[in-house]
Amino acid sequence: MSNFKSVAERLRTLDTERKNLLLEIEELKKMADSKAKALESEVNMLKEEVRSLRVILGAGETEPEAGKKKPSRK
Image (cartoon, rainbow, N blue to C red; front, top):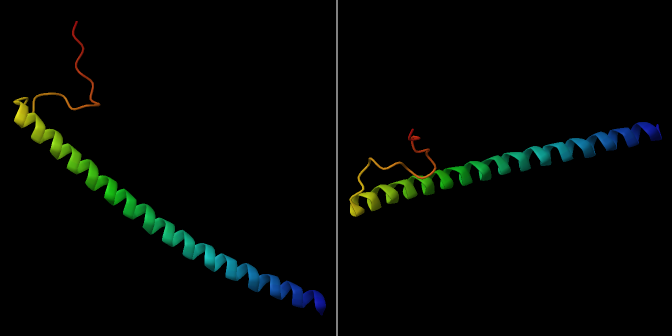
């Protein structure tokens, strides 16, 4: 009977730990989503700033953006 009680207690402990871990996972997912949205917003803001600076400098929209490959000349 003692063995049954210890197994039952172990099951309760593991179930509680499982529930806590699932809650933590959900919170971490929400945090990751929030950070991704913030980063996306920042990237869009930086892109807009690049466009504005190009207009101010007279470069227009024809200049390649940073990170894009320029066509090779042969």
